[in-house]
Length: 509
Image (cartoon, rainbow, N blue to C red; front, side):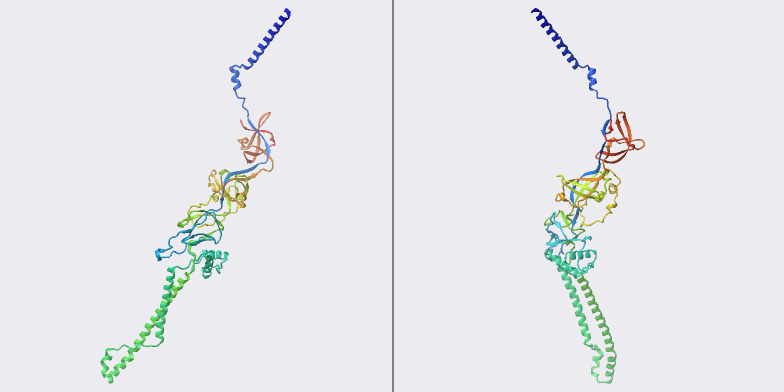
């Protein structure tokens, strides 16, 4: 019994020793010297940073933000007064030009439409390249008259020959056109009517004078020779021979001389009267050639292309129409964008464009202008009526970067504006002023090619491109030919085939 108790005590002692030893070992593994701790905090030995070579298709694009706008903004103003302001009337009624019907922003204007009204008279839209700059009426001639005649014919009002001369046929067509719009064409004013009446009266007076003189001569009347003192004094001796001889001698010379002089005087008088009549008729004829129905300078606006859209309006009812009255645009949509100069060098007219709205809807477009040609028109410069521009060359002949170089004017870092035409707006319709993502594809690889990050390309002293490849044996240089780049990657072709998919190329240390 005593022996068993001793054995239990010995076992307990051994167990205690084992536990104490194990605890000391565990504690020892958790305790580090300061040197060990410092060594543990040091970074591992530096090595090259590598990226794997991939085989994939590359598509190079230029991406920018653009805004949806209406095409060809142009300032709009009137070329002159609307109607003819009468003078000399009661307080010069109507002389002050005031808008009586303001133009409406967003309205679509077709040929023959009324843009607005001033003093109750219309301002009408026509198609033509020559801007309105004068009143058109009888007696005027030129290219502006010819384009008016063509416009009248297009509208269904026949002006007669398209001669460029404003005649009675043109005046009649203008009258019919105005009537179809509910207005009366501009007729001669009171001053013009008064002047016509005065000229007609001058002709009548000259005719009456000439007829009176002609009638007097046709009667054959001859005025008696004036009596002299000699005739009167010798009256008592009229039967004497001497008296008779004296009168006979006078009668034989004086009446004949006076008759000849009178005929010369009457001849000169008739000639002068005829000349006065001719001059009066010429003055009347000249005035009548310019008398009749007119189109005042402010009552027509010629646009190079119709229809147009009234984009902005700067006048309201009661305002004076002097200066700019608004802005017109084409009815088609375009996208305006700006890209960095480095991207602009890659673009050319005719490139296809993908347009993406904020909602993810897509539309297609085409680069239609670059650089200065694509800069928005100065629609607030106070200029006159819209004018067209000639084409600036064939798109098919444009070379990449040619337009951008012109726009940059020697500064390749200058931003390059571009304009994108959108033949079929689709989801862009009704979104003028909204932003859109512009994506232009400038190139694509020929199928799947080897690609590496741009950071992996190094140029050696001989000017050749190389990449460093890390293998088990270390890092080696491989000469490559660089191709298309996109999204930070570049196509590479190894000179000796010593590069394949899965190899690791060095991009940093």
